Amino acid sequence: SVLEERIKLQNQVLDLAKRIDPEMASSLQTKFNIGSSTAMSSVSNNNSDGKTLQISNNQKDERTKPLPAGLSLEDVEAAKLYLETLPVPLQDTFAKAATYYEKDDANKYKTYQEVIFKTDLIITMYENRYSLTPSLMQKLYKESLTSNMKTGEEKDDIYDLLAKKGFKVETLELDEEQMKRDSLVEGLFPRVLRKQDEDGVIIGPSEADLITFLNAIKETNSFSLDNAAAPGGTDKITGGYILRGTNNKETSTELITALDDALPMEWKEKYQFSYVRDFDLNDINDPPVLFITTNDFRPNISPLFTNVVSLASLFIAFTWFVGTFGSNELVVKTLTEANEVIAAGGNSDISFFSDELTMVLLPMALIQGAHELAHLTMAWKDKIKVTPPTILPSQTLPFLSFENRLKNSPSSFSSLYDFAMAGPATGMIFSLIFLCVGLQLTTTMDAEASQYFPGLPLGFLQLSGLGYTLIDSFLDGNGVLLTKDPSTIVPMHPFAIAGFVSLLINALDLLPIGSTDGGRIAQTVFGRFWGHFLIGGAAFITLIILMFTSDTQNIFFGYLFITSFTQRDAEVPCRDEVEKIGNLRLAVAFFAWFGAILTLLPSV
Image 1 (tube, rainbow, N blue to C red):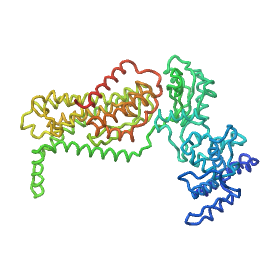
Image 2 (tube, rainbow, N blue to C red):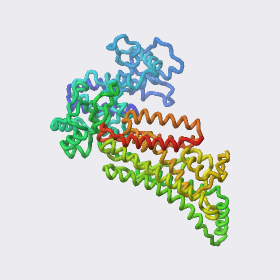
Image 3 (cartoon, helix red, strand yellow):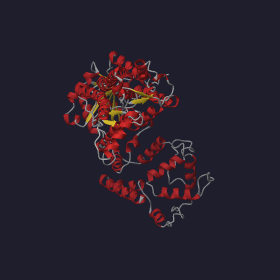
Image 4 (cartoon, rainbow, N blue to C red):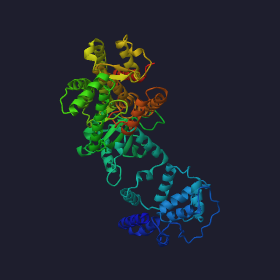
């Protein structure tokens, strides 16, 4: 079946070549020969048990090297047979790779046909298998594929056909520096910028779209391209283009406004540009660059899947809060007796439990609702489109967080900061209010009213230094917190329960990791590279250390596990990532992080 696919690809390439230039079709046929009749005969004549493998090459095939440990003669014969079925460019790539460590001159690579001892080729590749890096193989493949092609048009057409067949042809024209740049861009920007169409080709602006953008630059005289940095001042990267040069306007805002006004509406409906810090980190003083990408940042996740996750998380949260009453013997006894009466056909009033459960669920909903409302208010103010929130589950807390994905670019880092900070800051404030009010009610309510209170283990309360300190200050003197047994249940008013767990949830949301609210804030404060890679990496390592050195391992393990799947990417690009966010926002960010640290560090 592999050979049939290769032959089908060969025929399509040859048909394309004949339409372009009939005279070069024969040379192209040699270049993309997928296997001669002898190779096909070899495949068809193999024994059905797969044990007899014979190479169909008429050349004398001996070896001068001993077989290394782990490589059998059957493995070698199978590899040689497979090589015979490959297109010539791939055969030459393997030949170049095998002779890479033996050549004395960069121009003395051997083609596959020049390799006399095919067994030596296999042995050499096997011995150097850990050194043949993807970047080296891509480089060798590019050399093999593009050699002897007459025109650039011919090469582009073949690339287009290969792309439609599912090959990732973007890497075929990359040198090592550009591959490093692509790798950096893929780390600094989310995967949604690299969406693929039905044929597996990454969606992004074409050369014609780039020319339209260059015409807008020329018309407005707003940006001077740096021809020394790259040909025409432009670099092709995965999913877009980078334009290096100098801003001719007074501010980044004026530059963006001028280009927006000059670009045609049909261009802006599909693509956008951002003014961001240069990806080339060799010189941190390099001027910012224009980054052209698609403007479709809608996530690829199915709404049905996110709805199922949210419903499951709501169920887990509900059972978590019901579980806080499980240590109250009076509640358990009363519910058990009521269940027995109902089972016997009688009626029993359990409204007391519904009232108590509502008293903990309602403030929890109000706190998280305030968190989300703050997000939506900032999104409405700055025209940021967001997805409906997805409730992420947690193994230790009622839920981990509400995840909102951005569907378009914020206008600036300040806009992204306001959106990201509004939610957890509001949530932290409301959590502290409900926690303090609940603790005050815990100490003032009479015994009859407090007999149905829910409770949390002392060990769980000690996971938060700030939360435990507040609880200890309000409940000091009742003797409960003097015990050293972490399993001791501390009964509290439902408001206090909701406030305490919400405090933990919102503090986790402020951690500077990935595309969480804290990660978004870190990108606006420290820049995309420093905020995502360095600060986010440092936070990630710190949590891993805390997992093994403190009692918070369950919370942090669940947090890292979920965010690694859902929010590990950096955030989508802002239109303006050059303008600074200002000192006031900086001060609020560091104050919020300080509060999150106090909350998440366990009590001593």
